[in-house]
Length: 65
Image (cartoon, rainbow, N blue to C red; front, side):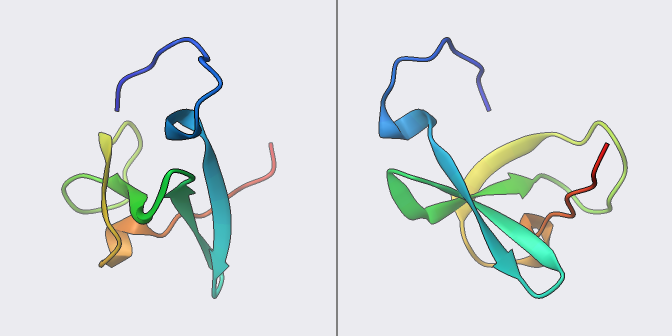
C-alpha cells in the first residue's frame, strides 16, 4: 500500500464487510480487491497490499481502542 493525500476518488475509499466474527476490507472502486496481510501469521507490523479476495489473510479483527 502507498499512502497519498486525499484526492476524493473511489480508488482511495474502502468499505468494511462483516464475515463471521472477522471483517473484510474491500476497495470501493473494485470490490473484488481486498486489504490483504502479506505472508502468514497475525503479528504486528505486517505488510499489507490489495489482492483478489480468496484467503484468510484477508480477514481482519477490529478492536476498540
